[in-house]
Length: 372
Ligand code: UD1
Ligand code: UDP
Image (cartoon, rainbow, N blue to C red; front, side):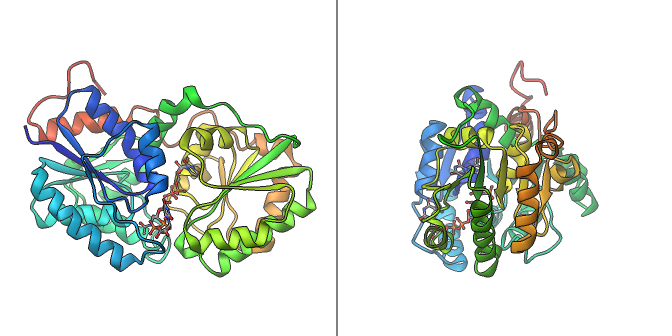
């Protein structure tokens, strides 16, 4: 039987596709995995932890790669994989260059494309950049759309997507957290009663926003020396160099190489607050009951903000300092941000996705005993 071809390239796609790959494996569904390796080291960390061995590895990452060059190489490489693999459908996740190129490569070869985490929109093509475009383009090219929330589902219908092709599944990142949960132990920071966790990597934050975020972290760290900070720094040189130069001397700021997924979730779980521009962290924070201060002016994930589990703090130094200090100092305000149920899913998203792939593309009912 022709296989389902799962394609991903970056850390967050790998984390969110891992539960789907696992479900395909458990149900004996024919599948192959192709990685573009748009990321290398931080992709491999995820492959190791979820025990995924790719059937195809394009090994594309180059230092400080440009969007155009990466996209061209992804498209050409994935075209070759699709021809060789002859899949029944291609499945991609999210909003990266890899997902855009996967959707386009599948379209060019007349292979159906199924999009995991479909329908998120900021409404601004420039932010997140270029992810908003990638996600909109993937929706145009997809034959099957797996929406992670009701809002994403309704957005796709509002855009005129055929309702028969849209399924609300929840976000597979919650499945990933549940798979990792046995290995999560809330981290503590020796010498500190409490700490915050920071991640920053978004392209639209490069330059002045990153500098003002770093300046704000510095000011907060100096103002509250008894509160620690852990920052596993993203390897993108547009972030890494500045962070190490500007914060390397502060005793209560601990800069690390990227953590593996279990270690990261342990840090997030043990942190009093998270300061982040990451998509995945906005979704994981509520599940692990850690308030998230979102270092962005908008978000295509408003559900966490609406639930009260996340706050948009922008990228201006003064605003970040004020809102961060308020949460550090006010335990009640932090507690008020803890939600009982994640707005992003119930941990059964991969099952719904694999059921739908089986019914739609493999010509049969969902695997026995796997009712949604
Ligand atoms: C990419 C995605 C972004 C996603 C993010 C998750 C695009 C356009 N961007 O951004 O949507 O949120 O990944 O982290 O698809 N690097 C390494 N080692 C690694 C990974 C990256 O050294 O393991 C460095 C390389 O110099 C690389 C650079 O980071 O060229 C940028 O990587 P790239 O994937 O182009 O962009 P990200 O900013 O990581
Ligand atoms: N993450 C990780 N190690 C780290 C930092 C993040 O495993 O040191 C995980 C995190 O749990 C989340 C994902 O990486 O699931 C987020 O990736 P990133 O912030 O790079 O991308 P985004 O989600 O914004 O696309």
